[in-house]
Image (cartoon, rainbow, N blue to C red; front, side):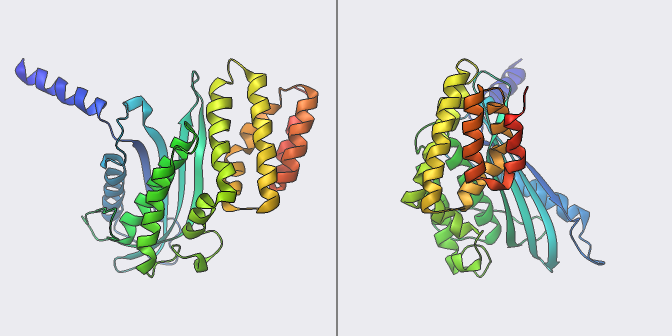
Length: 300
């Protein structure tokens, strides 16, 4: 009986103090060229270690219930290697539940094409927020903190600031590394520019939109759909103003990559005048998805 009670206490404690993320980690080698092959057990080992690192490390000072964990996916596609040195591209997606529904909306979706890291069988992935340890732990912790920043921003105005600062600290520590993606000179769509966009005062509008869109509009949409649409329209107008100052930033592209289909769903059942207004705004600030936004104007 005492043994059973101890097991129950263990699981209750585990549920109460669950870590913040529920990450699904996928490592594949489909992009390897020619006759290059990797030991399948090494892939399993790498996948297991990354999953354990993300899911078991305590990233915040807050307590997350099991149902509050942030669902996310790290899909790592290794495209080359030499010895224990690997290059890969990675798709990272994170979702957020919408209050009083079973629906989840994307809060983070990014493809990083410049992952470079070292790994050997049974290597330990360690993280030190005050120092650069190695490329793999820095890459993983950088994106974990960005996910947390976006998630916390969606519940409180600029609520993810401390996690954005931690991501910035990781980037600064990685400046001593020769790995690609940490410096602005490495390209226009790299980690260094992500941080620059997010900390730039002119870009703060998008972080505030993150809060208004999710907490003030989507979380209350089931009870007040017209009010929710009005809030989202104001968000789009704010993005338009920001885009006039700094057009086509990485973070703005992220927003519409995640939200274009959702915006169609939200406005396709709106009154005709609101349909037209939303379409006109979206066509101007996100022309990439204009053919999709045309569905807003179709009769339902």
